[in-house]
Length: 256
Image (cartoon, rainbow, N blue to C red; front, top):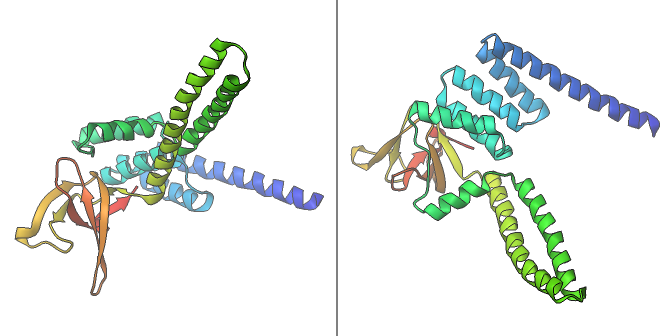
């Protein structure tokens, strides 16, 4: 038993040290302006040790230095999915979009945008923790209403429980919504310098061209169609800023 525990601790320490060494190598390559080497090391680290918000942020910075704007935006977005409180990733994402004149996708509804913006400020785990805390407070408020003799305390417990119930439901909804967005990967980034979208799920003729989108543009995937033939092609029906829904070849986008 002791030998097994020692082996586990040794393996953990080795993994931590190896990860730290890999990160140092990648950071060193980045500081020496060897951005392509840094990208390769960061990607290898992601495969070996798993992803993280900071790792995606580093990849985004390296890709931007390589003037690969769509890849930079993709990794900054992925960093924010894992950790919405990553202010560096959020600031760099905004900077890259503004400098490249890429408009951020927004829905037609102000309330929808407000809801998504509010939810995205915290991770699903953080919302779940807040929800658990609110639930405990709700139970205390109910207990105060039931067991307290003071009329004032009973009123505070009654109305407080009502407010906390609403907050609990809201925070739970935020947690589930944020989790579903992260798992379902409904948002994507256009990768080519310019992508042509079609009015139908196939390569467009001249009359079927819907519009073109700049590389780095964020779109929301609403539907998908797999076309028969060889090779098999997947087409996504996407929504983007100030455009009607249209179809794009799946090879032209990468899911966040």
